[in-house]
Length: 384
Image (cartoon, rainbow, N blue to C red):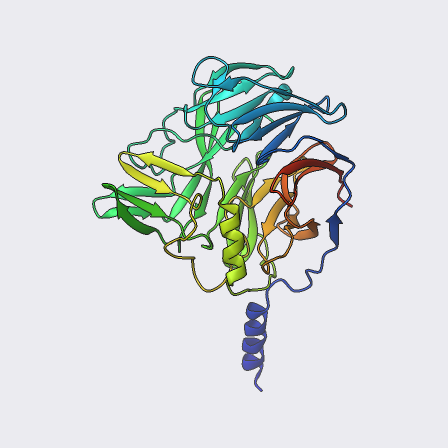
């Protein structure tokens, strides 16, 4: 074989065999250091305060609470409504400096402020104009922030779709907008390619509903506490980072097993939809993400992507946790990614459990019992 042909074969082998040597240690979290005795309907997110108490949201019960796991006590924060100190449905918690927390209230289109002493206060108005160059859809001039960094800057991705004369279409790239509330400055810190997402339209009751097939693979991004933005690609599965000053670190492809979508996967997805409602109505058009459905128009393809939507979470010490897909019946499994975009650990939970947040050297997990009730667990956890 000639030298040129040898080089060609070597290159082909290298391109067809990504992520060589990525064997990482696996940790299984089964015995918690503490568990809160009262159950929840659905634990979606927590925020740990400096004194160890927790701000907890249960969107299914429309509950916003402060928990003291050491004492086994809980107290409501605010109340349901649209007036002072009130909220409609708790959605996300954003950690702000000084132990202050902002809770996204998408229905009231505002953010409720929770003070360090675990009392509710005023509101943050997110209705700021989109940054220059950001795609805008449906006449919208704002997007609810989804993350905040340690300096108090908030982040929100641009719209994934826009309405055109020929219908709703996805954009080919999405910006991550950074909003410095102190100065009022808005800028785009990162761009993420966005493609290969199929919208399925259904018609009825005088409106058109667009949904994303449940097992669709698409890139996602998330802002970290230190101001970095992670861009997680599904094909090939890899993680890039954009620093707060715009420098990009490109990660190597991460090895994963490509699995066919099975009836078991579909049954598990249907089980997750119980009690979920995830619909946005804009201008008479309903944009519906998977949620509240039992029989989607399409499932999304022949193979499972490496991760699904809402699979990303940053720990307090800057590691990116990605919930992985796997065989049906497998317990929740997370890839822990370092600052170079490399997997450094795999974390496996008990079957039915899921990650809800992090604290100072701890991980918080929601355990699900046979009746579907969820219990908050605390595990000591340090990277080593």
